[in-house]
Image (cartoon, rainbow, N blue to C red; front, side):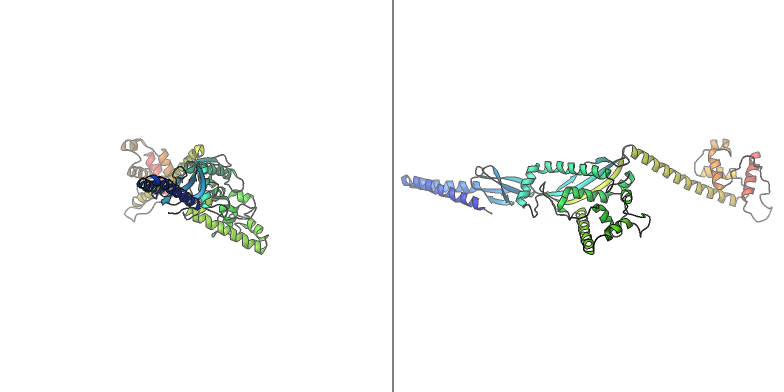
Length: 419
């Protein structure tokens, strides 16, 4: 049990008062005065011993005569004379808080809607060169405790996301670039929340650009960074950041060394907080940020519908191309094994094998059907208007089977049609 000087003085004063009252009464009735002294002493001590719970972990902010003072009570037993009239305390739960923010919807410069999901872990209290741990808990209570901090963090992140998404320097140029910019979004959000708790970078150029420049391997610039002239040729690995390299070389050797040191420190801090190893104090809210991640950036609204349709068409085109390739190979295989087989017969066999048409349809389908025409086009055997049928034998009797040429295949197909 720890006692401040004020609490010790209060304890002494109360004990002296008990002794005086008991002594005066003992002058008239000794045993009554002695008994009263013992009873008052037991009541005083038992009432003064108060417990700060340890599960879940708590701290207690000391209150004297209704006013909060800069004294923190640790978990366990604490001595508070005159509780609760002279001294009391405010319980503060200090366990880690995992906050998954609701998806924030913002617009990119191309007016597309994107949604960002952010998750962070924080803990009440912290300290810095300008603020003690006790002062941080007072700030935490002034913010509104856990409920107030959650709301403040949500508002800060939403406002900074909106600014980043529309920025013509550090933000994305369109929704496609935004979906690949989780790291950039994380970096600007951390700066907005943590402020000077992050290592400082002294430069007029956005820190996100320098972080890409000094990363290994170098990260690619955004379209906005290309427009700013920091990347001379984004398709060349040697000139990826040529424009920013020129700006870097304008600095003196000492300035280059200091800038590199500052950017590396910022990159290390960002990496630690992404991995949940951060201990960054947010002074205004009275909390310590332990982890911060941008889980997902996705496209929303009409743009999402259009993007899904484009992706579906691309998948269907790829599937059709693959299917035509398989069908063409199968037709060539059938006609190679059976030189007397017409192209129409081969197409029908393949269609039946693949379950594309029923036997009833087979009885009425012709070479002019869409599916057959597609197959013929894929094989390069489609007959052009006005072209005369080719003629020729399909093979020699009794001899070795010969693979038919394209002209012979087409002639055989025409003969089969005339029949």
